[in-house]
Amino acid sequence: MENTTKNNNNNSVARLIGVALALLFVLLVIALIVNLVKLGAANDRKDALAAQSAKLDRLIEKNDDMIEYCSSAEFIEEYAREMLDMVYRGETVIGGKSEEE
Image (cartoon, rainbow, N blue to C red):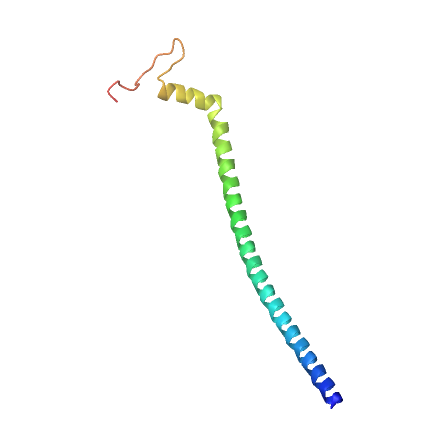
């Protein structure tokens, strides 16, 4: 009888260990799936940020080109003539804007 009790205890312990290992395995699989989903979302966010960064780099380059043009003597002279009605000394304006425009 004592042998039977020991066998039952051993079987109970073995079942308990088996259930604990199965539960641990399920928890590890769930953790793996959750982390894979998070990793996928992080990669999507990274790709979106890289695309946005490239777009901003193009915009910065375009603005740098505009700043460079606006700093040129050609632009400054054109702006002064058209917007400020300025002329060089001794220069006569022919066909300029009328004051009613």
